[in-house]
Each structure stands twice: as structure tokens, then as C-alpha cells.
Image (cartoon, rainbow, N blue to C red; front, side, top):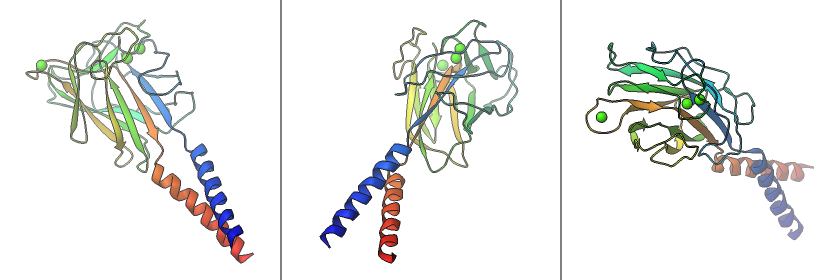
Amino acid sequence: MKKHAILKTSMLAGAMAASVTVAQAATVNVDLGPNGAGTYVGTGAAPDAGTIWNNVSFAASGVSITVPTAEVTGLVDSTGVATGMGFRLESISPSTSTTQFRSFGNGGTTDLQGDRLFSRNGALGTVVISGLDDAKTYDIYLYTAGFNTNYTIGGITKNADASSTSNGTFVEGEDYVLFSGISSTSNEISIGVQDGVGALDSFGVLSGFQVVSVPEPSSTVMIGAGLAFLGLRRKRHA
Ligand SMILES: [Ca+2]
Ligand SMILES: [Ca+2]
Ligand SMILES: [Ca+2]
């Protein structure tokens, strides 16, 4: 009886340790800008050592972008491994000749914030991250550049002020906002991007983003416990 109890404990601990090793956070980095812009290489604000970024663009600098755009697929994670994630510009509201998505930056901009997408003249731009797993949660870092911008996910709005600079350092509330523990719906997360101060008359900027998938701790422990239970059953029937 005593031997059994020790076996149970060690099996459970072993199964839990194994599942913790398997479930690692993965980060996907996206540098947004116009066609031909350079790709940022380096770390961002997310606690991730990977330095590989996807360079995503929809039009030349200063050219209006028709929405919804095609889905950009084939995004890789920060170590270069393929993921099922994608990205698109979903809508702009109101949509007139003066309120569209556009991109900005010269072709040589290899930093993260120097090139960007923006919703014009106070319009609400909605972008979508796709190919997510509804069973996971995500930490989402959204980067601005030089314009006070509001970002909205699931009815929660966060603000990055206009004091950001492309100096290689990232300060929350200035250079970026962070949404933690976000779940996807139908494998997608929608993000609103809009002018963040005073009258709705200026730009809402998105210069890039990071998505960190957070392993679900409760399901990880449950898998471990389930494995241990199966092991015990097997032993009992042997
Ligand atoms: Ca860039
Ligand atoms: Ca304004
Ligand atoms: Ca950028």
C-alpha cells in the first residue's frame, strides 16, 4: 500500500514534468509597412529571445488599401518555424475617399516602428489575426509610432500616446500596448485601431505586433493527471 502511494506520486510528478516541458510559449512577430520596406530583426517587448519577424505589406506607401484585404498566410514564429497564423485588414469605418487604411515609410526602413499601417482621419480600422487556437490564450503586443492611438480588443480599449520614437527601446503606453490572456473566437482575434485623443481627426497607427501563445496551465495539469490515471489503471489490470 505504501509502495503504491509512492508510485502514484512519482508517476503524477513525472507526467506533469513531461507536459510542462512540451507546452512552451511560441511568439509570432509581424513588422507592418508599405511594399518594399525593410524587415525588423531583433527582439521586441515580449519576453521572447527569437529575432525573426514576418514583413507584411498591402500597398505602396501613401496608396489607399481596399478592404477586406486578402489573408496574409504562412507566418513563421520567432525562430522561423511555420505556423497556421494569418493576418488581414478587415474593415474601415467610415469608408470614404478621406478615410482609408494606408501605409507609410521609405523602402529602407528596417526598424519596427519607422514603417507602419494607419487608419486615416479618425476612422476606425479593424484588423484580424487568424489561424489561432480557441483553446489557448494569447498575449498581444501592438506597436504604434508617433501618433496617439487607441487599440480595442473585446470591448477593452488601451492607449499608446504620441511620444514613441524609433530608438529601439519599447515602453508600454508609449511605444506599445499589451493585451494579456486574450482568447480567440472562431480562431480569430479582431483589433480596432483608431485616433486616440480628442476629436476623431487623426491617424490610428499600427507599426507591428507580437502574438505570444500562452499554454493553458489547467489543461496541462489535467493532461498530466490523466496520463497518471491511465498508468495506474494499466498497473491494476496487469
Ligand atoms: Ca520595417
Ligand atoms: Ca484626435
Ligand atoms: Ca513596421
